[in-house]
Length: 132
Image 1 (cartoon, rainbow, N blue to C red):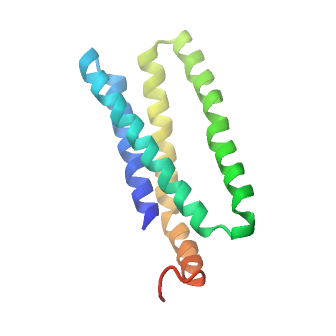
Image 2: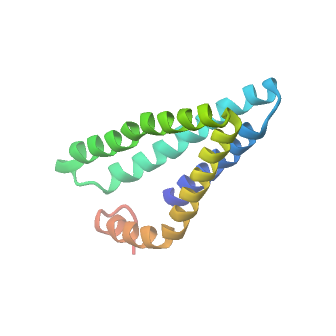
């Protein structure tokens, strides 16, 4: 199910972000950054695929524009907040805080997965993507 894949990639993102924030080695940090980017792309694309799959054809464009605007539109505010926190404390503390926020979001998402799966299962049956 794409939801569990999305959770696993989110979990990978969280772990690597924590690892990156605790790293004191330039070369190790340089290696972790592409993994962070790849895990973010995997999570975003799997969520994107699920939303496009369950959307009605006539509403898909509007739904995707709202989804993309909400996901991509919130990033600058998070960057501003973490940058402000880094100027008050330091970059390491700000990144650890960001990683902990991501972990909290992952836990909240994981707790909702059974409910999301039940809702998606009904939609997948209705759209004949899976059989009963």
